[in-house]
Image (spheres, rainbow, N blue to C red):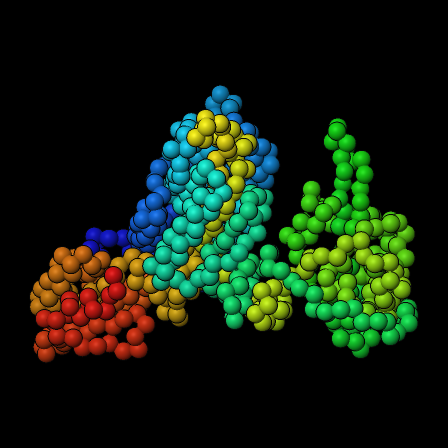
Length: 581
Ligand SMILES: Nc1ncnc2c1ncn2[C@@H]1O[C@H](COP(=O)(O)OP(=O)(O)O)[C@@H](O)[C@H]1O
Ligand SMILES: [Mg+2]
């Protein structure tokens, strides 16, 4: 490829809205172009990277036995009504009507359509297992599209769906996908971690996320450096930090804490460590009558240690909160506690509340909490003596760095990650809702056991750049780079010898199947080098009259500190030796 025949549109400045480096660099390198919030055109340079991502995914999916098909972007709402997701899916689901006033959706994912195909096509146990996938445009009307292609509204996803006759076979399909994902991200040259994940609204039994490690990641990954324990913080189990509750040593006292409404402020004022305080959070659940009106509201007081934070995903799994909860209103808080937030506690509430204590809180003694009186807290509080035992004791907090690993292997560490892939064992959630049954050996209909497996194709570009860049621009891993070698001739338009050697090397490398770019634009060396460093091509060959006098050219890897002089005669062998693929 010659630059004059390609489309290069590098820019000096990043757009003002680009908060993270990948968004800035991908825009400056001319890979993406914003059309609207969370909607991008993939420019020729960026599309080349997307195609490489897709082909690695295709090869590994096919190798793992999955079969490619292509399902529509616009899908009739009827199918989504069958699973209840037309109503249940939030505003992320883009709903639209056609000219006949019929409802449609723009797919955010394709469980409904693939299950519809499966129930028509997969009728006998003899046809199972099957794993079908496509690489297709998705639309999710994200509340906060941001970070360029990492959280877009329109994006490309590879989604695969497996169909099995029983759970042990489904587990094998899941394991095969897990291994394929490792192969995919290994080949892409990304540093990643597979972590146990919450199964969320989609439901199901087993789930792992593939997280590319990067400080700007939206997810917190909890792992144990001494073992293979790794989980999303949403799921990572927090053990009690106090093995057994000590007996009381203080009497309960009311302490004046004027204007001090946070645990930090109270601990400072009372000159106590933060881990002696307890934080109160108030939730509410509503029971509805058959007509849909609120018949009864229950108020819940959740207690976590002052230095801990509530984990909302865990709270949502507690019996009684499972059906859905909300934060209590100020009015409800006043009604039950007689005091505004900041001075709330479990002792002396006006109306009964259900008390859920985190495991650590349940083992605390002589602790500090709000007194249910403005400007006052209680100290020396003890379970059993000053207040009844909590109604529920369970894990409702986020793990913090240094917590003991649930597998007993030592302290936990936390790092940030970007979710690029997700594997789920779904079970029968969709097959049961849509009647996707097969006939077993005895002719009896059985629901198919499903798994679903997503990879954020376009998000991978952003994640790869977050992980691989420097002050000059992108440093693509070789497998993803839009071009693997760029030839930069000095004076291409002036020197016949430079032009002839550059063209010759370009043709040689093309014949070898190497993705080579020849920059024949006649740019000044500084500007030309800056462009290709910004774009992030792994290897650069500089051809100049001065070098050619010695029969040499200069080769420099994108991460190399200096260039290497290489005889022109041997340069294609040298380049091959520097490339892994
Ligand atoms: N808004 C988005 N923009 C880009 N990629 C996305 C977006 N949402 C999801 N993805 C990608 O698609 C993959 C599968 O999505 P899924 O797990 O269903 O999404 P989520 O975790 O947001 O519910 C994710 O692992 C991620 O890589
Ligand atoms: Mg996910």
